Image (cartoon, rainbow, N blue to C red; front, side, top):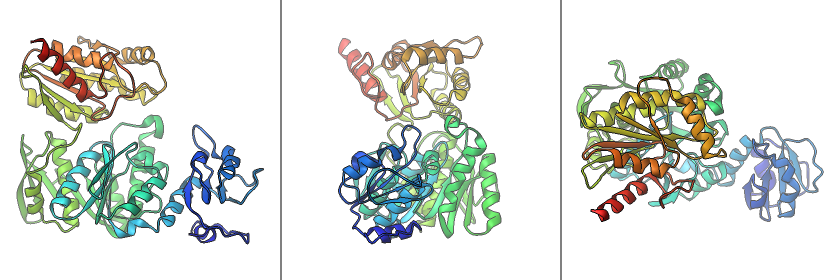
Length: 483
């Protein structure tokens, strides 16, 4: 694509005779190659305008920036909101690739990964080839790729959409991705709102700002597209009311209200009942917990919008194989059951501990988790209280340090422990904390480890392990060898 054609999509008038062919787009000066269009963005950690000269030296054909003037020599165009324009430019550069797919966007504080995996499983089982962009991995053209962000940066996202030959694309859409305009230049056929609970307030500031950011996804749905919204929380009810009043989208609700389009009742250990119009069906629960009945229903509703009959979805769910780091179970040599889960918010931890506690019954129940450095500190005390409520023994440790020291994070964690009769153990080394819980737990106990799920460790710990699951497996191998 030529420069002037691309700039016209951004409503930038190119008052120049030069019209070079653009060979790529980036906002990282070190990634610039000859013929690239560079977008200078003022970020939190760095200002891209300081790297304009470097971009030209690396071969940039032109630069778009928010400063009216620059001392760098080369084709420079002024524009507002270059972060948003980068996303739009990437979409046009890759020839608006969303148009060749049926697009699903999924947002919510908790459950995005579970719902996206369930929906992808149903669609693929129904012979609808389906790409998946999310937290655990990206899945494109039947191949798995490593994921570094829930919602990729806009250039990577558009490139992946362009390379995908899949009929459908299921995307987890994070609040950070929405706030940073990463999905600008995409129109969705359907979007799902799962829930909104306390998280990321270090970034968004208030729950109101957090809600408005999440709700923004529904402005990207095509006219008469489908909004699938959980009615269980106050924010879901608010979104239902706001979208229904506009009458521009098909709004489907799901939850435990009899007025919902998809009405859930009688959630048991392995099944729940679902009512849609005149259809009454029993649905297998792929993962434990009431909250997963909601996630499963969201996936069934979205699949129905794709044309998959509900009864077919139910049959496909019987063969669902689970998700890495989402209530992932492992049994030790002594009969102790270990559960690994990504839950990292007060609501998420409460939901998963409730499900795990039910599974444990009267058996001893241990919980290992920690906090990340430089993250939302307001949720720490609440999460510790939740753990102490459900667990026989809580073991506090660290998660990613993210710029703070282990000692500092442990001190902050200890300060967050609420006063009360029950005192958690505090062990800074995450692998040692897991070993401690597994050693202390009597045979046939239940030990749940939350916070990281399948994520690799960023820190070096005492035991040579790179994830919670590998730490558990290491404990298993060392102790079996000692028998």
